[in-house]
Length: 232
Ligand code: MN
Image 1: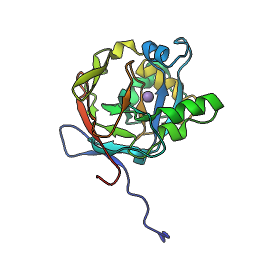
Image 2: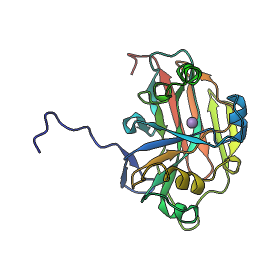
Image 3: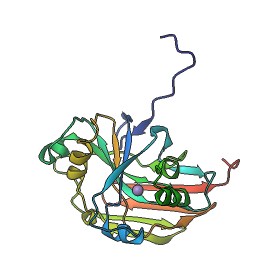
């Protein structure tokens, strides 16, 4: 192939317990999937969740140093269960949806909240609030064993050792199966797709120097540090 320049490197995620890596295709996110977070965002908790995307190359496998992004003075954290698909399809039935899941992981949906708020106010897209460079730190994928789909389990995030988010996967308004089914009614899903499934309440502003640690029962932990531009 006579490329005019070398194509971008395929984004891959490590898989826990081996040396295999997972090639990422698309990254979807669910908005407002925990009632208490919907309330803190000032929206009706009964509203149907909706979807947005992050660029795949915004993922930061394994976390580590994250450069504080430009054009914001209100960067916030959202700790989320991430679903990694091993197969896809269109119009997937809820009953079939979990068979598409290859693995789960912990991820942080980093958000320029001021840009998102301005976009909401002006009825503009959220893209620049959500699609920031390095805006998706993510832990190693934990493959699904027999019956290992999480129906519940603690999900938490600490900033500088102080607990900010503490929820349970059982609090999700839409289950993983329902999310996959619903999303697949809008777009054809495929192996390599990731879905960030929404965050519990407790989101807050973070600044340069902050250390964030999060975890999900059975799906590992993730740690990042915010550094000033030029420091990395
Ligand atoms: Mn989110």
